[in-house]
Length: 391
Image (cartoon, rainbow, N blue to C red; front, side, top):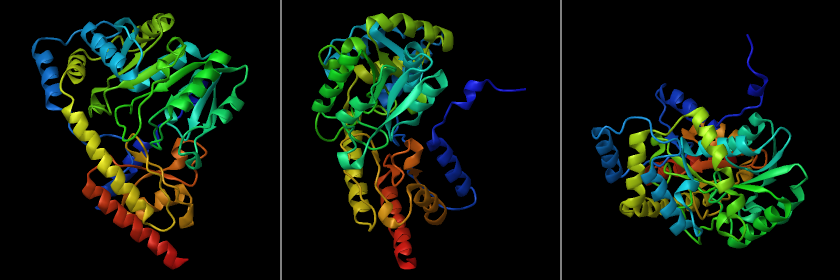
C-alpha cells in the first residue's frame, strides 16, 4: 500500500511535537515550564460560555448554514467594519474551522500547480506546508531582527516573478511579535496592485497589540478586492478549543469559499457559533484585561532575557511571542532549545521550526503566568551561565 505523492510535500506544526516531548519528559518526573505552544492560558470569558450553553439547551445542535449562522456573520461584519477600517457586509464573511480553514480554502481556491506564494520566514509553518501540498511553490521573504522583524518591501519586490500569485502577511506576527507599519503595508499594496497579486492577511493577533495601530491592508485603496482577511476567536477570546475562525473575502471569491466549505466540513459547530456572537456583541472587558496582562508579561520576559549574557531580545509590539537571538551563547537555536528542555526543564521552540532564516533564534510563548516566566528565566540564566563557565 502507498500514500498519495502529495503527502511527501505536507509539513507540520512542530509546537505540538515539542509539547509532546515536554510532556513525555514530565512523565518521568521532571518539572518542565512550557513556553512552546501559542495558546492563551486564560479561560474563555463566562458570558461566552453561557451563550453557548444556552444555545445547547435551546436545541441549536443541528446543521447550520455552510457560511455560518446569519447572526454571527452580521456580528463579524459589524466588528470588522469598525475595527479594520473598511466596509464589510455579512455575505463576505465565511465562518471556518479555525484560522487554518481560511488558509486552506484561500490557497486551494487561488493557487495552481507551479504558482508561487511568498511567505514570511520565519513565519507560521502551515503557510508553506499548504502551499507545497496544493502544488505551489512557497518563496520565503526573510523577516530579520535587524529590521525589527518587519519585511523589507524592496526585498519583497525583488522576489516577485510572473509566477507569483499570492503574498501571505501576518501582523502582529508569529513567531516574532513583529508588526508591519502603515508605510510597509502601503508599499506592499502598491506592489500587489502593480502585479495583480492576491494578499492573504493573517490578522489573528490584531487585537493583541501593545504599541501603535493595527492596520488591515484591506483598508488601503484598491486592496479590499484582492485581499483575503483571516481572523478568528482563538487568541482574542481564549477560545482555541472552540475552533472558530473566519474569512472576509471579496465578492468574486465567495462561490469558491462556499463550495470548498461544503466539500470539506459542511459547517462549523452550531452552538459554538452562538457563543462567538456573544464574544463580539458582549462586553470586551476580559479581552482588555488579558491584553494588559500579556503586556506585563512581555516586558518581564524581554527584560529578563536581555539580562542574560549572549541573548538579545527585541521588544515585540504585538502577539504573545518573543524570538530572541541566541548566537552569543555559542549555541544555535536548535541546540539551545534542545538543551534547555533536557538540561533546564524549559520547553521552547527552535527558530528553524518557522523557516530557514532564524537559525540563531528560539521562540518563547509568554502565554503563561508571570510566576512560570520568572522560573523559566531563572533556569535559562543558570543554564547559559554554565555554558560560559565551561567555555
